[in-house]
Structures are given as C-alpha cells and as structure tokens.
View 1 (cartoon, rainbow, N blue to C red):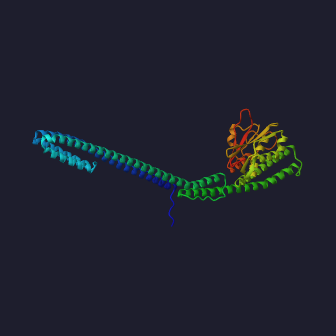
View 2 (cartoon, helix red, strand yellow):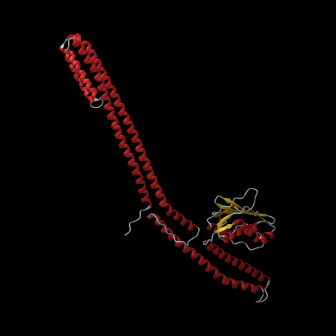
View 3 (cartoon, helix red, strand yellow):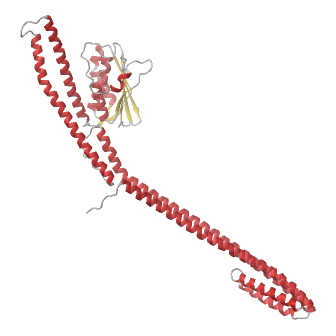
Length: 475
C-alpha cells in the first residue's frame, strides 16, 4: 500500500516550517550566546569593581597603618597600637581577597613579611625604629602599587578575553545564520526545481489544448494536487477531442448530404434553362437564372465549409521544418501574378531572407489567402506591400493593400467564420463567404502565433494584416 503523496500546499508549508525552524534555531542560539556573554560581562565587571575596591581600600589601610605606627612609636599609646592592629587586620583581609584572584603569591608573601617586620620594629626604641619604620612603610607602599598594577593587568586581560569571546560569538552566530540561509535557499531551490517540471508540463498541456492539439495523452507527475490538475486536463482533452471529432463528422455529413440534392437541383435548373422541358417565357428565364445563381452560391458555401473544416483539421497536425519564408512569399506572388496583373496591380515584397520552423503548406495557404484578399479589394493601379521582419525570436509578415479598409465596427469580427463585411468589391463576382480570414487565423494560431488587423496609418488607406510567428531561426 503506497503512502499518499503530499500536495503542493503541504510541501510549501513544510518548506516554510523548515526555513522558519532553521532561522528560529539560529536566533535562539544567538540569543543564548548573547545572554551568556552578557552574564559573563556583568560578572567580570562586578569582579573588576571588587578588585579595584580592594586595591583602593588596601592603599587607604596602608596609610592608616603608617599613621598609627608612627604615632605609637612616639607616644607609646596602646590605643594607637590597637588602631594599627585593626588597620593591619583590615589590610590583611584585602590582601587575601586580591591574592585569591589577581595578585601573585610571591608579592603576598613579601607583604606578609614586610608587615611582620613593621610589627617587630614597633617594639624597638623610638630613636632606632623611626628611620627603619619609614623605610618599611615605603616598601609596603611599593607592594601596594605592585598589587594595584597586577589588578589592572588582570582586568585588562579579562576584558580582552571577553572581547575576543564576544567577537568569536558574533562570528559563530553569523556563520550559523549564513549556513541556515544557505540551507533555506537550497530547500527553496530544490522545491522550485522539483515543481518546475510538472508546472512546465501543465503549461505545455494548456498550450496544446489552446492550439487544438488533442492527440497526446496528458499525464503529469508531482504533488497530489498537481497530479489532480493533470487528470482534469486529461479529461478536458478527451472531451475537447470528442467535441472536435463530432464537429468535423457533423460538417462532413451535412456537407455531403447537401451536395447530393444540390447537384440534382443544379442539373434540373440547367435543363430548364436549356428549354429541354419546353420553351420558357422571359419571366420563366429570369426565375431560372435566379435559381442558377443561388444554387451556385449555395454550392460555393458548402465547398467553403468543407475547406474550412479541412484547414482546421490540418492545423491540428502541423509538420514543422525550417522554411525560408521570403522564398515562400515570392512563390505565392508568382503563383497569383495572373490575378494581380489582370487588375493592373503591383506587388512589392521587402525583407528577408528569413527562416522559421513552420508548416510550409499551411503557412502558404494563410499568406495566399491574405494576398488574394488584398488583390480582390485593391483598386486598379494600386500597390500591395508584403513586408518580412524579425521580431526578437519571432517573425512578422505584413500584407497591406490600398483598398477601402475595414470599418471600425467590423474590426472585432473580421476573423469570425462566415462573417462578411459591408464593403464588398463591385466586380460582378459572387460575394465572399468569410472563410478565408478564418482559415488564416486558424493556421497562425496552430503555429503558436497570431494574426492582427493593424490600425490604419495616416494618409495610407487600406487594410494591413500582420502575422506574428515564433520559432524564427538565426540567419
């Protein structure tokens, strides 16, 4: 039993949670590191203040010891001796506090020895002991200065170590943040690459459906919801394929069913006009002529319907290959030269050579329809212009005539099947069926391009159609 596949939304949620967890872990680690360093900084500052206080009070007690000792040596007052002993005891406490964290043991030993020497000198006669006592206290003061210097050195060393640790912690947090960002980017990139393929397949399938290509089965792998989209697109493809086949079958059947009685009707009208059933009056001949013209028009509509159906069917099965479009246009102009020369027209082709991946036969049919349309609507002596130009990775083909153009009210419907505009050429020929431009639009869309009726240029009457095709090849 296979496990259910995660959906696109679930994968996005997991990716976001993973990135948030990584960044949260780095932030928490940084906060813990910062709190630890701040605690150490506070403890170090408190210890520095304590050491500095002990050193300062040691100096004060040294002065108190010297003052009491000198006075005792002169006055021999036991109260002064007691004051000295109290100051010495307090000084001993400060020295022990400094010795525990900052002062070297040899200096402490020297201080103890110097204190004991002072106490011995206090027992000597005043005359002999005063000079020696001054020297002893001078040495004791020098020891106090050495202790204060060592306290400053220890404080600076600890501050430097704390600064180095702060810098090391900052670098560690920065590296962790960079690593988490790199992992987050890798996760996002992996997710994007993993999802890019099914999304490209979805896009390809949608484009194929838009171009009426229903022959390939749509099967998309990936997250469960993307697979569901693929299954729905496959269902849509099958339905559209069925509808397209039904439409084509219906058109074929209806067209062929109409052609048989229509052929009998035309034969009957021809027999009437030939007076096989007897002579006709003038009114009867006029009715026969009307019947002949309408049956001819109806046959033309049926043939155009079949042609449109055949063109739509062929557009679904393009055979692309590199084609030099400029040579293709020149061939079409040569093939229709009898038509445009008979009307006294000129055809100018500019641009090229230009190579594109197209179905040569279908593209020739589309351009030929535009050229025939331009010949039909151009007045005698006019010029038809065909321009080829590169447009990025694509190709543009413009066909412009000098006819009456297309009214603004008809521009949006010009490519609809069987739509005929109000302006029809007055050349005695049967009116058009509105199939030609529909076939052009169908063919160009099958190539992945588009055909557009461009706005009229100032001072340049007529219609200007532009075909835009992708898949142009380098020159």
